[in-house]
Length: 255
Ligand SMILES: NC(=O)c1ccc[n+]([C@@H]2O[C@H](COP(=O)([O-])OP(=O)(O)OC[C@H]3O[C@@H](n4cnc5c(N)ncnc54)[C@H](OP(=O)(O)O)[C@@H]3O)[C@@H](O)[C@H]2O)c1
Image (cartoon, rainbow, N blue to C red; front, side):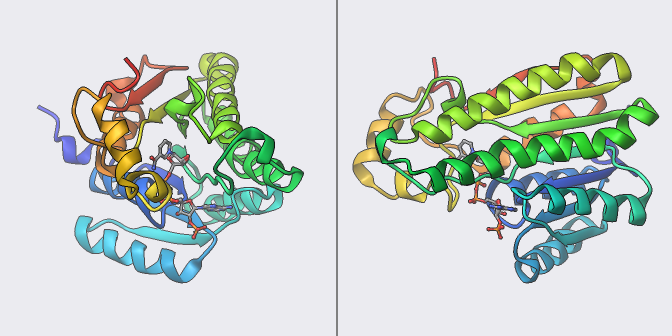
């Protein structure tokens, strides 16, 4: 029987937005499965502390690298540094995302539209494109993009963010189609409401929280670790024939 704790042993993984929330839980899960994980976000100091924390818990190397996920030159530099350091990229998890506005879509100004799309979609695409240089050449690799149930059905007051996540789902399926024959799998995970800083405005408001959990069969919101478990599955060989898929992790809330 194979040792599940070693299922990603020796693999090189990049997790954007790995400094907190879902990204941190993903980095921890991949590291615990044996991967050498690079966590990337904008604040190196925070990243370094998280890298040390995960590494101490799993016994595997975790490397913090500064990167602005919405800037093409920054994600390209991230790829180059990982290649120079490790010589390949086996796994990419595009997790970093932003949402600077909450309210009706009419509230959205051009700067907010640009920020949402730059970080959530444009940067993710160009990081996929960067890692594809190595993955397509080696005819191996796995990409997981963090979408959202809001990308399947637009969430109230999260309109433009929802559109960006619909774009992430479409990009995932498009790349899965184009790269599948070359041995590179591209999938997405679509979380519902998960307890992180990102969604604090929702779960810390009792009225919003109560409305949310009332319609959820599990009667609760999710944890970052529950999302990370789906990402780990998609990154593992157990998902070798899973491609272009979107795994919803929302406790059945979208039913
Ligand atoms: N929480 C939810 O309920 C929920 C639901 C559905 C989908 N999601 C998706 O799950 C993913 C993770 O969400 P989360 O809740 O864990 O968010 P979070 O707690 O706000 O963490 C976001 C992470 O992304 C990084 N980040 C943000 N902007 C960045 C940028 N421009 N460049 C590089 N890194 C950046 C942050 O680090 P720095 O700020 O230090 O850069 C942080 O590490 C996102 O794709 C989100 O859309 C979340």
